[in-house]
Image (cartoon, rainbow, N blue to C red):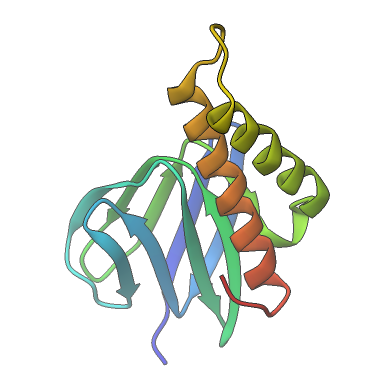
Length: 140
């Protein structure tokens, strides 16, 4: 299978750099599969989604939270992620606690509850749980 160079950048530096078989990115229009030879493209990444990098036939999963993917025809792809978590680094207990905490905030709001913020935090927690499950060979 043909490969292409991929770089994944975050605010803190380079999270990934190498030749890959494929990249699956969550965009506003749905999942976008990028392979070698893909055409020029710049598109936004959803606020909370699962990104998959396939390298040497092995899939690695990432929780990605916003950003942009930039693909150059016949060349490189660069992901500029606002926030990114590698699946194997996600603390499942912490993600589940965040899910439960934000579900409670949404189900039982008080005057100080920011529902928009609680929903955003819930989406992040659910994404982290899904990515951790995928990284361990499970499903979403």
